[in-house]
Length: 277
Image 1 (cartoon, rainbow, N blue to C red):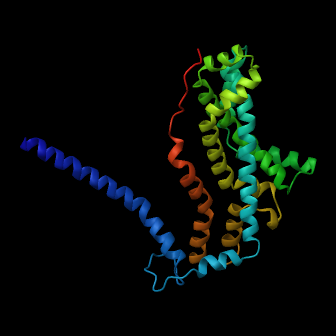
Image 2 (image 1 turned 30 degrees about the vertical axis):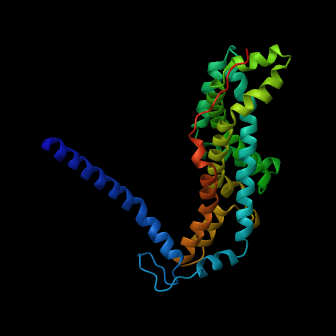
Image 3 (image 1 turned 90 degrees about the vertical axis):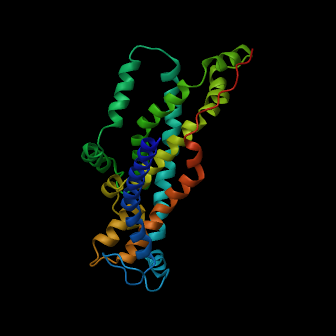
């Protein structure tokens, strides 16, 4: 019993040390971020603010074009995510339900495109956009982001549709429903958790993507916030660390809000109802 107690205490101590290291690894940068954002004299070294202030947030929001850049980011991220989910929901159903020649090869191509680095595509994309007159357009940048997000969404939604019992659709066919109606009224509602997960992942990718809009856009009024923060703090002299920290917090807010709204339900498995007899 004594040996068991010592072993248990040692195990608890090891766990506590590991948790403390993880807390310090993630907690210290966050502490620097928040204290710098609320300090008038923030610098690269951490310091306790003598007086808390929201001046850094106000100064960032008062910068010309910053609010517009947040709107540009929301437009690109939301629209591209919705398009990718719509395209993937249409493409993933036949891949899940039908067995046809070339199906495996097509899935491998989709998987290959998912892992293809965006840097390998930017030169031909830029040349194509330049010849077609599509440069400096938020709409076409949004389409590019939707195209980049669609392959991953296809794989994700296919796995969810695979989990929907095909006998549920077959029961609806007995009642006179067409395959399209069964897909819309039965499969899509049951695969909704996968669509939500795909949308959130696509939104995160669209919100954080720097390279595509940086290359394909040229007007400050059309830049998303991820490019604006680079231009503002990378090209204009010394860095204002307080404003940089405030900008970083503002930039992370939409992602944090989205996670808080849906994060608690993303990991739940689908609840499939019984088959009608």
